[in-house]
Image 1 (tube, one colour):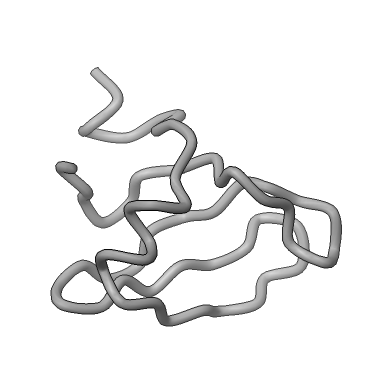
Image 2 (cartoon, rainbow, N blue to C red; image 1 turned 90 degrees about the vertical axis):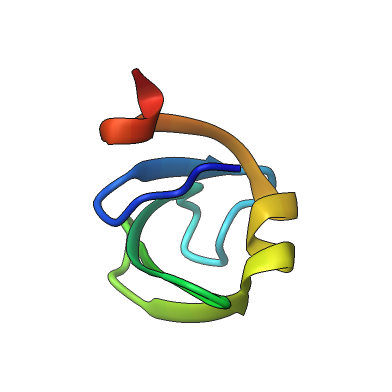
Length: 63
């Protein structure tokens, strides 16, 4: 999966705040995401992050 910093993604599961939209802040072996609902930062291993993505909504990879 081609993830880029600045992409807005939709996850398969909702965050406890109720939002399922995340902004990608860092990409590498780990992926740092910011919840668009509450602003919480999450650091996930790349494999787990890629499995949890439903679709890329906007950003360079959405085109």
